[in-house]
Image 1 (tube, rainbow, N blue to C red):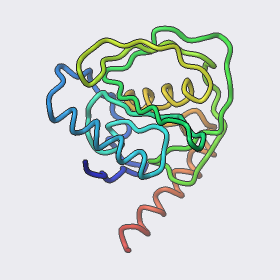
Image 2 (image 1 turned 90 degrees about the vertical axis):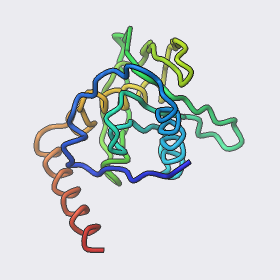
Image 3 (image 1 turned 180 degrees about the vertical axis):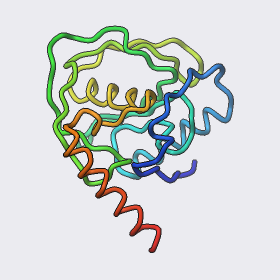
Image 4 (image 1 turned 180 degrees about the horizontal axis):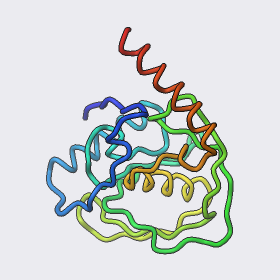
Length: 173
C-alpha cells in the first residue's frame, strides 16, 4: 500500500466529471487500498479517486470516529444516490483537497446509495448523519463539484485564493 499525494484546489482534475468504471481490475483494487491508506494517513473520513489524480469513479470512506470503535472502511465503485430525503441537515464540511478551510453546507439528511464493491458485488445502503454528508461530498467529487461550490461567490473566491497561495508556498518549499 502506498500513500498517495492529494491534489490541492485549484486543479483542473478536481473539476472533471468521471465516467463509470467498466471493470474492476487488480490495479483498481490496489488503488482502493492506496486510497484507504491515504485517507487514514491524511487524516480524513472520505477520499475520491480524482483527489489522488486518478480519473476513476471510486470513493473510500470511514466515518467511525469514536475511540476504540471498530473502523468501517468502505470502497464504493460507481456510487449512485438512488434516494434523498426532503429533510436536510447542515454540517461544517472540510476537504483534503482544500486543507484547513471549513464551511457549513446544507445537504439531504439521509440518502440511499448503490455501488459495486471491490469484488464487483452490488451493494446498497441507507446513510444518515455524518455518513450521509460524507458520501454526498465524495460523490460530488466524481461529478467535478467541490464543497466550496455550495458557497457564495465571494467566500468561494477567498478560499480559492488561499489555496493558490498555499500551492505557491508548497512549490517553493
